[in-house]
Image (cartoon, rainbow, N blue to C red):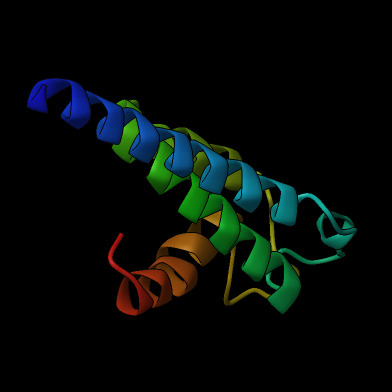
Length: 105
């Protein structure tokens, strides 16, 4: 009987992780933040953090790695702040270090 219980627990855990991804995505797209004039604004950075958390969760449960694709797309988002450059630089140098420091991703 023990193996069935273990499979059930794994499926339940995966289901909760998928729900967490859905929650993160809904929060990320539930505002007009994406219409901001600059990718380096604090609200856009918060949404990028939510996107990264969803990506890391998806990668963990699926084994499919999409972070690099996401970062390549963000290279096209140029900041008005010359110190930021583009969205990839923003994520790699500002958001990811804070996210890694504050959680166990």
